[in-house]
Length: 179
Image (cartoon, rainbow, N blue to C red):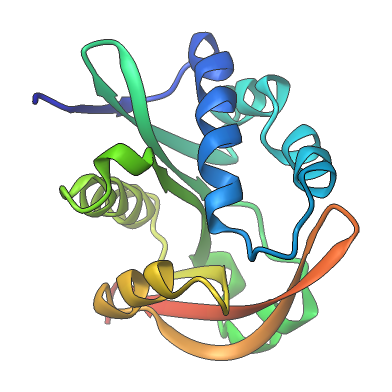
């Protein structure tokens, strides 16, 4: 199984949206309805949005490609945080970037793809002069929380995250990149 990590292009947008439609619901608590998840997919994880993410300097979108099939992706959002909770817990907003997305096809969980995508994201942040990485993750997502804990992301606050019409309880996690 040879997996290539590469930057996404606008041509990857439809395949990324298809993968997001499979992986995003797996990260959601069971109380989310399919309609609620569909609204979030349309707003945040549509082909149009992935095309924007792939072509804008505000984002760094890496994908895991196995023989022409996209099996995972990770995205850095370099835009300055506007959320008051995030702003309160980041001392230097100009040198902080969000690990906005990190998803792997469930058939490939546990084989190291997430680690490769995370390393790519953190490396891109460092190359751009970022000193802090931050992310939010649902408090009920035990698998993701264990991964981020092992990867050095400490919980610094509780935060809400809207998925469609539902407000979820997330953790704000932060990791220093450089000292």
